[in-house]
View (cartoon, each protein chain N blue to C red):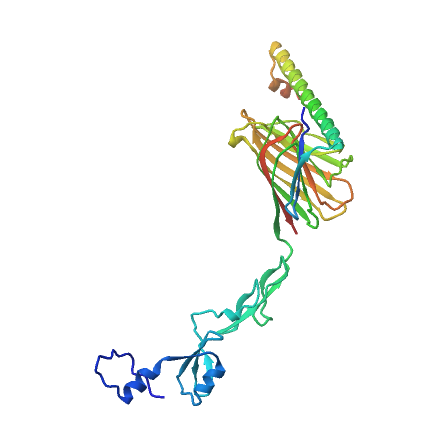
Length: 72
Length: 285
């Protein structure tokens, strides 16, 4: 896998540098990627759980509005 | 000196009278190498007489008392300006005057107390300055040299990433646990439960997608308040895009809890890379 690049733009001189990440930046990037992927997976799990709960409700003949009416 | 008679075409055989010579032929512009040469040749100049001096490329007329330059009300004389950036102003009616250029980044300001009614002055506070226009590329973009502004405003235009994810930022390259934020995200009219983090190493500023359709690209703003302070830096971000199936809007409020004036921002393309987009950086005082 190629090393991702970073762009550095000096607003004072308008100089733009595009270079590959150094080791520290790459390690940090990998950590953030792992974290975002974990968050995405957790969100997906939550969505699956929600859909399963809605299916169970539907099987009982209930809707989310019924739960709201009960104050749940 | 006789009054001029205008213009006349002389024909072959015409006899020139003294009146012809004085009224027609003596009315021209006399050419001399210099004022000294002129004065040597014309010891008794006549009122209304004209001359051209080759050394100064000037045309003068004799007023009856002295040789004076023409005052052409429709021309700007080259000699009125002396240097790059000079401005032609006026000190009074029909009185042009030169105003030298001011220091870099000063602006021309009205001031009735000065001779010309103008001065070069540092812009008053409250102005907004475009600091940089940066193309978003790679996995992150850092914009540096942002110091001394009370507020920083970043305007995102046409942003897309290779894979959907959260856009995040860091200030001053600070990767400590110094960011706290709360996020509210909605897809169309359905609002997700609020999310966020305390003592995070990045601050989220919005969710961005990978749809290449131009109308689906992310646009939004990020405001960094109190950027010139060593405490009390807060952030507000508003972004929106369409993933092709729904409009996603995100509002983020956050804080940078470290004690430092903000001199740079790093914008991360989430867990991905930027495919397109521009960020305009403004400083506000």
